[in-house]
Length: 145
Image (tube, rainbow, N blue to C red):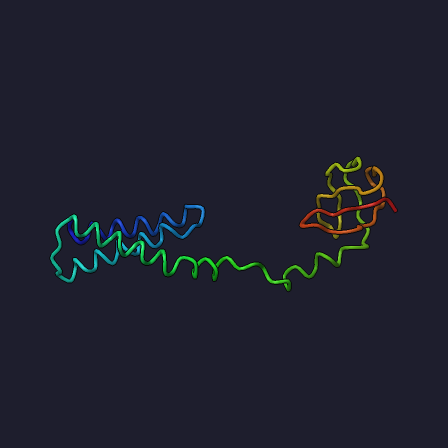
């Protein structure tokens, strides 16, 4: 193949990483294609089957050496600093926007925003004042006041 074919293949594979679910596989395949294109572009002669073998070797080597490092760096857990406001909602007053039975998820208003909520002890009625008992993720657990 011609050198610019590998560059196009590399760019397409690297761009495909943007629409893939994020395993960082396509990125390294794209980089390998760009490297093979660059090698051919500087004038190193290779037949097509050797180009494919070089592409595979470079791809697997980069996947083995760099993928886990990149994933570890980019897929970090969010810091607790950004989540510090959620536990502060415990003890606040929420107003149900609908009747909610026990262990059924409904909507409440708290701080001017709609939240998903689940009553813990007894059903709550629309407009009834409720206290937030605990917070799990984005769900408030409430009890009537």
